Image (tube, rainbow, N blue to C red):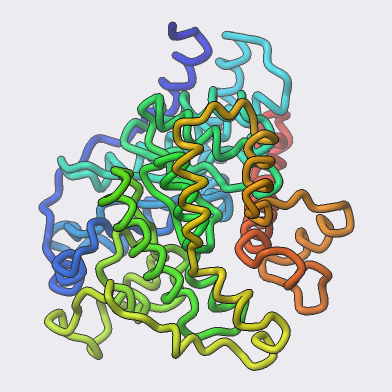
Length: 423
């Protein structure tokens, strides 16, 4: 049953833009990616104007770019636009008129409306009569509040029905996997984000059967001073998901995320989905080194012998620990097949099942000193205590979420000032 609060939230998330119907213009380079097997190309941006500058050809908009992703650092770039128009204060007044809310819950709900408005603005501007997918991340406070995450996740999908609900994989909050699974079972497409390895992608697919999951390619390469480590992990994750789609009927698609350079599009062509900054997509479209006919599926390629991991990192971590980023143990697959039909009451019970099977290192609850280290940077610290002591993918997921949480605090502070009339 729809409450007055929910009705207000859904109504306020609607775009005030008129739905545009510009012609769709095919671009040979992006069309070649599609021919190689890639199904979607998205842009990493929450800014309609930034995306418009990329997509507008003068004769229409690019056909092959059919979605966008927005996490907290990207949303932070456009908050001032909505605050300047006075909209969040109006949303808050109407929400509070519908139901008295604690300030943290009110701010999280205002943030969800803001994300819904961003997604609907994108769909109105660039949908052009076709499906437009926008992946919108839940408020980071919900990582540790599974019931509220489910509730706001359902509401966020109603606010932006062309979108996916982005649920961060949180090694310190195993309930995140149950939230993702339950939203999917309720018919809400989920993008399980903050993921960095083939085995995390397999967990997302076999346990939660989410619509999308990711490998953050650029952070892998940057974090370990590598050249092709991220590309190799993405290809191994893609191959693992293809096998699971065939053998287990899962539907999860892989998003190649966190791209730093346009060449990566060519190196892993054929992966399900790319999401890239507008500058990277523009670089790909404007380059003249690779012709469309040179782009082909790389799904059978391997970069294991050309990872380019620095000698210092290799000596510190060792090849076996690095290889766990792309290797998926058969025992993990069997555990996940058992868990698909098992009753798992909460995240702690789930963690214990993984621990008993020998895969407890997918989760880690940082101690206070570890938390302080994680919050200092979004990449592993060479002088830190965590590098090599916990699983690399788990470490990177914790760092990614800390980065998103920093941006979330900045957004919340800006919204709070606006709601209090201080901005």
